[in-house]
Image (cartoon, rainbow, N blue to C red; front, side, top):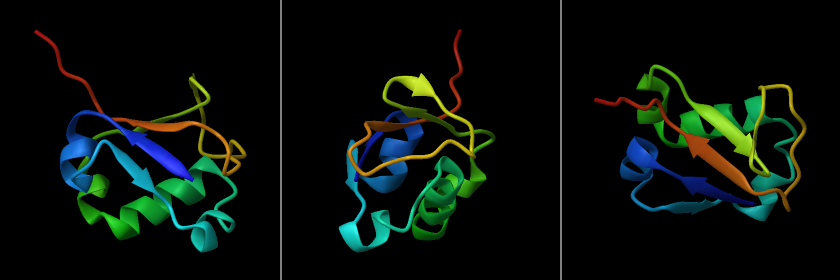
Length: 81
């Protein structure tokens, strides 16, 4: 499973993409489970005020079912000015 990273999430992980190992991704069935896994792997993600997840270009709630072939993106809080 490949996760696209933007903004501060890219800085935290140190890359613009993250590959979740197949052995682990097969056990991640929902957006919430993925966020929990990522929070354990990269604890700094838990400090963000919000973290949206898009699956196949659509925002997805924590109970949304994911598959390893989905395009997943982490979208951090955005500030503007």
